Length: 172
Figure 1 (tube, rainbow, N blue to C red):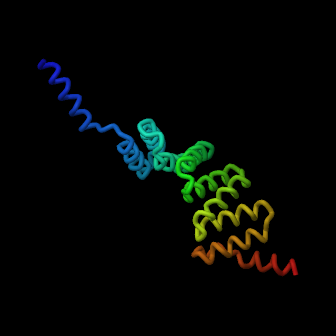
Figure 2: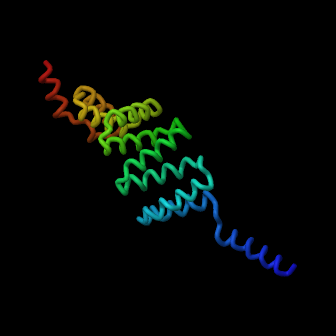
Figure 3: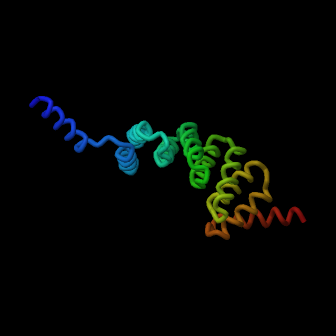
């Protein structure tokens, strides 16, 4: 009886002293990521997802860590899962668009920026990135339009006026 009590006591103590939960691992991952230990942060985000496979913030945070490590395919997978769980997350769509741009999937990135803008019509950085995407896809007018919108919503450096004015002059 005494041994059972001691075992139970130390088991309870270990749960208090060493909590194991999705929130614990998410917070630990965030701490590690903030301090530059991205690989260990990813380990904790993964553990958080073992506890709660629907924890959107763990997918988003792990996606950011993968992005910073230039592991774009893994980041895209995490953002995709976050979007499946929370389809109205404009930031997840934007971040996936950035990763797709880095992976040279410009059509996919354009789709993600379009969706982010539909969800948040004043998302200046999404207009800026969509403009850059359009420029790379040879849609110069669309690029200028997006850069202008980004500028109107606060990214004043986004408007490439010299290029866009030259484009307009050449069309006339």
